[in-house]
Image (cartoon, rainbow over the protein chains, first blue to last red):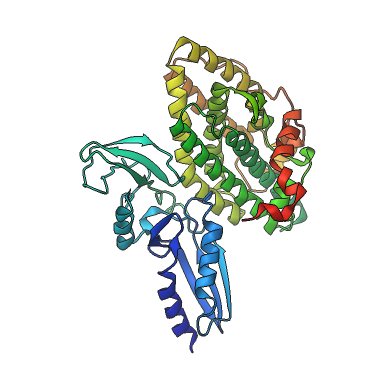
Length: 168
Length: 265
């Protein structure tokens, strides 16, 4: 089996690896996958951590490895984390954004720049008449809000802007 | 990489790692004790994230051959730590498990002082000629904005709250001022750090910090002390520490020292 065929298979399989703390969304949809290389059956996967204190990183690494080990044509799997480029919320795919909503989490604005106002829409009813209850929610990347329209509590993923790309 | 460059880079990385590590540990001791439930959730997330920043720096040290990241965090003696002394002080009297009489005003001011400076320092580190460090700084900076917002909110609210709150905050401000100088210094290798292109000058960063803190003070009608921030309890960058660091290390490394296999998950 050619390395290219194996790589295509791997990309399919990685769609099934979910974020342990957001079980409806895959790491690919979340924009964590930066690179996959296959060379004579040796696979190197480069992932971008979302928030750096995220305790799920070890779990994600193990889940990626177990998903790929045993595939036809795969001899070794290496998972690396990189900060170059830093993960930003504009990496979340359109499907990923919909799945965040399905999980009760408002996705961050699609093309957020540092200093932009953070307009948050309730993932249930779409209203932007919401109040911030707590900037830091159950995980560092989420905040807790309350919708004044449909009267549901919900969470929102914090925007992380690509503010310093042009300097680099 | 020349031996001199590596030696100075290592010093800088230990300062960055130890600052975040010890600061996050003291923060984590508020778990279950914060003023209200929302703060408990928020502060835990912040501490976990800050601990993650320390991990990034310890990993950079590991990559330089200084030893395993976990060992660097858990097995060094206090004299090898390079954190500012202000960050190691206990949260108050008592122990976590025995009558903790922790000081929230001190915690808010210490976090505000440190996080204002951390953001300035990360901005400077983006320009570092050590590329892995510049990349780490870009990453951490995306999160630091949120940490800083959190402590600015507490600071503004408590400084403009009741008379008692204001009095406690002013007392905490004076106390933190006594040792903030130890956070603002780069220690004995400071000039080399700048000369080698690792980070902008200590003086420039300190002046930016003073300007930003003065601006925050004026928003809440507080006058900056006329003297410079001091290091009354020693210069942690040079390995001088208080007994509170021994206390912290004894607790945080207890499990790792007794069974290094027990700490993984």
